Length: 297
View 1 (cartoon, one colour):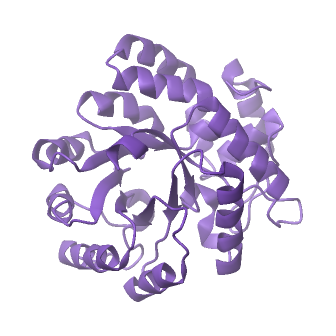
View 2 (view 1 turned 60 degrees about the horizontal axis):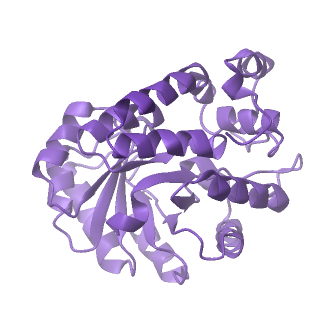
View 3 (view 1 turned 45 degrees about the vertical axis):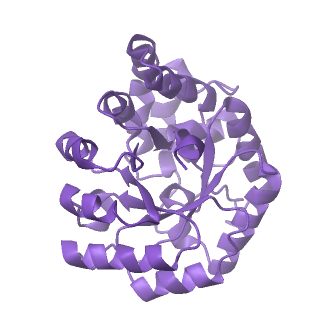
């Protein structure tokens, strides 16, 4: 699994039409762009995909469509998560895993379970999953943190192979790297922290920026993985001006606006999110030229 999922995974957005139905032609262009840009794997129905506003049938359609367009070129990681453990088990039971390499499953949100509850939840999920499981720690969305001790306990499970760490806590990441089994992967969930995280043992990233800048972003990550931190740092400087704008009105509002300005897909999102405000549109348009290039970079 390490060889398949080292490097850049792109957390694909779900393009919508102005009527807020799934824009499949735009999704096809997005998948082709990211593959041609050099990403290493595709992540379908994650947070950036607005999975929380997709119906179960829509999620299946998006997965099947990406599988068809991908045509076995890259591994696919599929997002399956909920704050009801039994619901996650039901979703696993209902999913066709024929073309899925692994699942990405977020720590239960809103409930704010104890560390023991988080551990028990993931053990149940890993026992039920027919493919390897990647944990997802994103305290800013879930309201709770998977502490390093819990991650390390879960790393002993034979069907849990990685964690996507989006806590922003580098000390926690270092604690994981120091004690983890050799075959357990630490994957960044913060685009701009990935280069420094690689320096302490992270093996890649699941990226928002790679939707729009797959070639340049992949070059940055691969340079860092090869130990060329000087080149990676130069790329990183180019992303600084646009990155903050991706999140000021919540993800994926910002990245969809960048993609709209590039002509890849529309900027439409589903409520309770709103499309980028005029101020955000203007800020992105005026940012360093990387934000408004009309070609894949």
